[in-house]
Length: 72
Image (cartoon, rainbow, N blue to C red):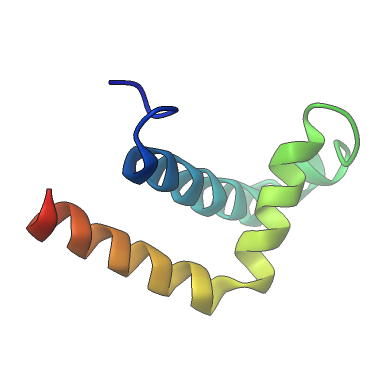
């Protein structure tokens, strides 16, 4: 089943995208900052969510990991 039809997989993909974009922006800020609009602007927005909401994203990642380990 693809991640689009399974809600838990969709949440996992979104959390991984947020964490990956925030990490890549910390390594290469110029690449992310030059693509603020258009289709690549989605990655910039995900990086901003990961930077500004990092305690909430971290809690969501821990909860998702626990749910995958114990309830799947």
